[in-house]
Image 1 (tube, helix red, strand yellow):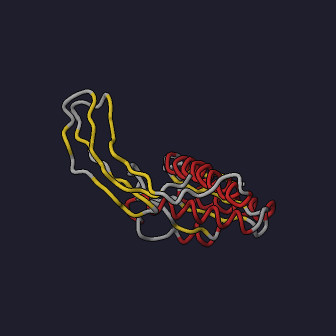
Image 2 (cartoon, helix red, strand yellow; image 1 turned 120 degrees about the vertical axis):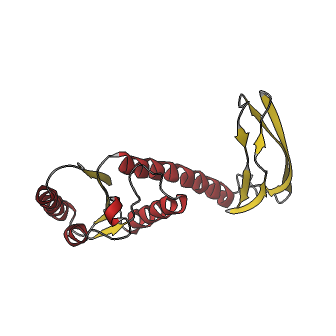
Length: 193
């Protein structure tokens, strides 16, 4: 179970703290020790500092970033991995995504986690198929010879290709002059299927 708890940016600090206490009581009543709080609240004045009232009320982990900025990708991946580990530890565990201010940060984390689960489920099905013998690993490498892009004339593009989280090829930034442009990338990759 994943819940989102959002608080408005404006309003008194007392009302905010009271709402945290009410949320903590509700969570402890319904879920006892099976909830975990992810604090995505970050204001410019406390970017590197956790909110002690939030930590005290809800045992929150601070994973936030400044409003109106995209989160660092490694932080978003780490949050998704923590969510997965917490939910797998006990089927009654609950995650609460907390965000003070605009809901976009909570929505972004929730969306990222949903996509993360979809990616993981693909590999679970793949691994199950390997174990059952329905598919076999192809040990031969595959070669990427070309990347073709369409309808991006007038833009500067560059590509990075990763294999097992390691960059194996990258292009220099290139101005795309025509409506279709091909980047040559004679790169050897290991296939999964």
